[in-house]
Image (cartoon, rainbow, N blue to C red; front, top):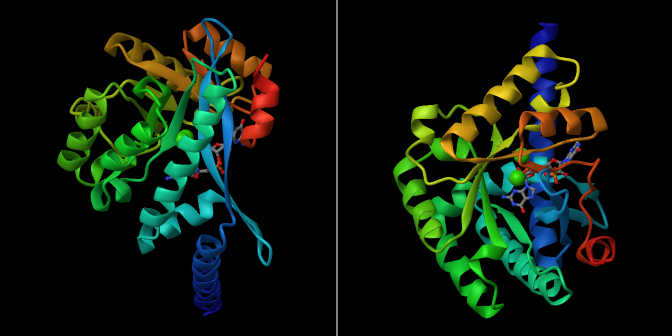
Length: 270
Ligand code: C2E
Ligand code: CA
Ligand code: CA
């Protein structure tokens, strides 16, 4: 009885939060309470900055900061991601133009794309027209799609990824190792790299299994000619191990936290 009551309370609470997020999201879209931040990606071969991952932030004056981990699944389910995704792309391209003009000539910016945007929207056309509008070369962008996103409608996703690929836009699989995509399925997609999930990087110095997983992913990726990116690096020890294992790119608080465009420029333009 007690357990049932607890469940009911939890469900009611999460339902209330769901409605709250719904109103925060529509309010934030109307009033533009969103911003984009950029986290550096560093080459482990050269030690140089190769680009940034774009990440969304939301701060409503009434409700404070709410994290993308909480609101992205919500906007995906309600379909609001289509409108929000359009805003994200526009903002990222405008910031990218700014970064290129400020002297960060060889960078790439990663865009996180939700499967809903691919299946219900027209991401390819959107990105193409923004590339033209902001005069951005395909080599300056990259797409991140989670492993789980691949299983929704593999044929459609593969087609859109191929369109991007043909234009010279690289594709990385995000949160690799946490989803349910089989290696067989992965082979059907035109991909360029794997982002090793933060949960494996986290335990790499103390946990044998995490170390084994990271080294196996890197070895497999090398054999398949794919790049590897390790995310969530917070400690020097983690960075050193990943470097020894032959990982190509590093990302995490140790290398730099996500920052707005102005701070990113002041930190990275020499
Ligand atoms: P993700 O794509 O896996 O992004 C990486 C997340 O790890 C980011 O969280 C980043 O701030 C965090 N992170 C990076 N380095 C470290 C570290 O060293 N330690 C720890 N503890 N965390 C680190 P964030 O910004 O909260 O984003 C969460 C998720 O929300 C993203 O996971 C992505 O799935 C989604 N997301 C964020 N921005 C966008 C966006 O513009 N579009 C879409 N579709 N999804 C987004
Ligand atoms: Ca990502
Ligand atoms: Ca990730």
